Length: 409
Image (cartoon, rainbow, N blue to C red; front, side):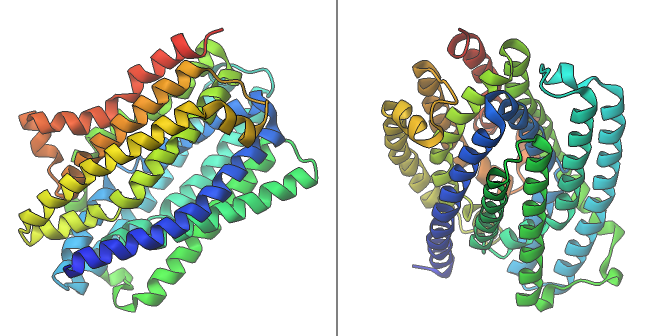
């Protein structure tokens, strides 16, 4: 077993440990959120989180670009270039965060948010305050959370899973306090969510730069040429992020508009149950990104092909888990959140099919992203591109099917 495989195995092992622990805290936190907010307000909160998820990933491709270039620099032990990439990435993401937050504040004061969320449970003014506070937390996280890309670049992604576990423990503790004190407002949940998110990333940042002092940058390491290079490769990822933007905003907003926030709660709970399949797939697939980049730089094509075949086998195994979740979905959801949320059997069936297809397509999407081959694929439209695009676009029609067939009463 070569060093790359040894490291991947080690990362998978520790990722599994932290994922299992995070998994317990994550699902306990969701149960508390439903208990604190109730079905309708939880539906509003779930829709808010879907928008937040888009913003977290919507970085004009900078995150993926930095991850790939930093992996290449570290692979050839070029610490000088690595520090230039890190500080330039921080500068770029800080500028972008300020611009995006300014846009959010402007949009909040223009649009009627109560119409967007299709609810009378909160006034437009209350929704505006919640929106701005939540996005304030998110854009601070946007900057300090950039350290995750550095962790991926050194192929120690188990550290990211450790931080995720810390976040959910902090969130669960905060929610338990809110439940104990009978605070049942979304505002209190937003504060608990935002502070937990930031504390986890601060810890990860301090840990990374303490362990890797050779990668600590200074302001003199900032290079405009690096920013140009990062933006060039980032635009290819940005093309897919535009598709993702529509996808991540579409499902819950479509359901909210057609059927109301209560139906969003049903959809979200079922999705989170079946996301177990995607979590397990991610534990194995996440270390592959930077490993693919390193192997591609070193022209180790035999290793790449061999591991892509292994990932196919993994999806077949995960299909069995998806089937189990489908067969016992009602019992599992009742045990998890009680009778607050009502779901349907057809919703669970469609969700099982969806997560299996998504896991299959992610095998190829991760490899294509890792080798910066997105632009070439977009131009040539080769068949393998369909795997990447299906990964990004399958969710839209799927959401519509769920809206019109599964949730409508």
